[in-house]
Length: 163
Image 1 (cartoon, one colour):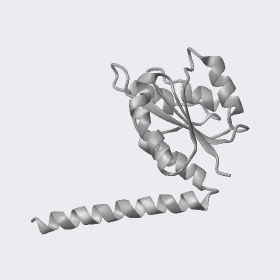
Image 2 (image 1 turned 180 degrees about the horizontal axis):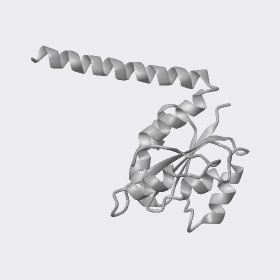
Image 3 (image 1 turned 60 degrees about the vertical axis):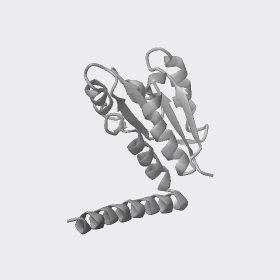
Image 4 (image 1 turned 90 degrees about the vertical axis):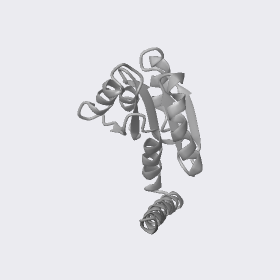
């Protein structure tokens, strides 16, 4: 049975960006749960979710948060599952604060971090993690990469024809 993915966001204002991750996970037929949880405003809910995620069938957790962006780090401190952080562009610092908060984790509590607002890559990284033990997912990823290669070759071909 395939492991599920969780997508947590610190605020509903993150949803427009996070929708990209949700869409990508569903394209790969990965059961996905989406929640709004705040490391600061709902710390008990975050603790319970993260502590029980593995036993609840999850294989990876994606966390999106802006500003102080502690959600991914707090989740990672309560689970041994892989955690992927999406720093959100939500403040006057254009997401740099969130990026630094997400990427600068202390030794022993890693969080994989994608680009600011990088929801699609967060989902693809989650798929790659789950594909380690899932040949069907691995094949789907390879097919996607092959399509991307073909698209670029075709675009270059059209460009050369128009010269």
